[in-house]
Length: 103
Image (tube, rainbow, N blue to C red; front, side, top):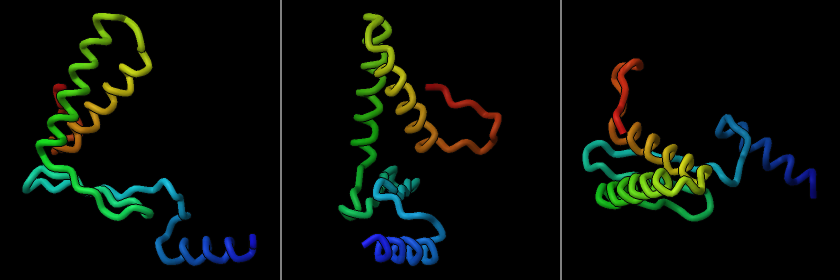
């Protein structure tokens, strides 16, 4: 069985130039309508609208504020801050590497 798996992995690497990872997700952000397209190997494409992305951003920002006030769950606060930063970079790409995005 290992030989078969090795062959499949080699074919995948030759075809796509990288090692297969079942957690790989390809992401495409559409600047025209502000939507996000995510394609997982197993489940097909998922589409998120601009309104859904804005709602996610609002949720993360509100929870960051809650965590600042309560002082608990610092690790979750960090995850939310990273999420806000990533969404900001996606929706407002930097033209200049030194330009800062205000969150």
